Length: 219
Image (cartoon, rainbow, N blue to C red; front, side, top):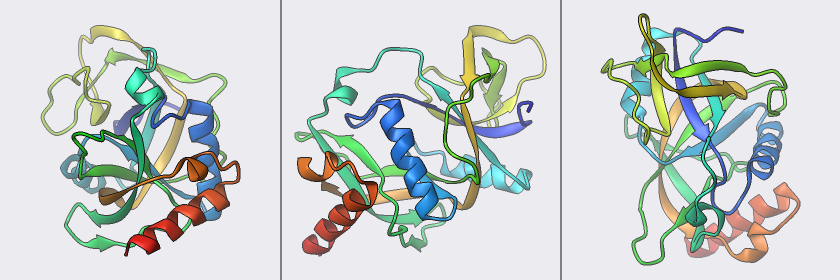
């Protein structure tokens, strides 16, 4: 498959103390439990651009590329890991998180963040890394709305294929792809610390149920 003309592009790696294999395994279990839907947590807001993408594309996609650099210590061994327990759409409407979904992130104890974000994704096939992935140059895409080059710090961006000379920036693999599903993008709130006992649970259903039970206890 070729690159779409416009798409959401996100780079992924070790996050909240979990490696790529562990993240994909639990996201695939979430996908199976939710009839194909899974939430993919991201650190930056792309809500307005996602809104525009859904207006331009009848079947918007999200493409995933592994991060090239080694995992940062703050991602591999975070101070704290939280689960995000409430959500709203890009238009500010409350959204009830699926009971089989769990979005986590690292959290600073001294300067905790109050907001995180997630893409609402759908796939009817297992979330496994492509054996022969499509590749493209970093300079071959531009931010879809502004037309500006994608910044190195833009881990997630809504982009379009760039027509014309492409600046260098390395080659990226598209190791995974999925569709975006309504409501496409979520703003997450009310983070709750995840105990080590929940984080280390091998069974995904047990881990999710334990976390949601903890959330109820805070209510």
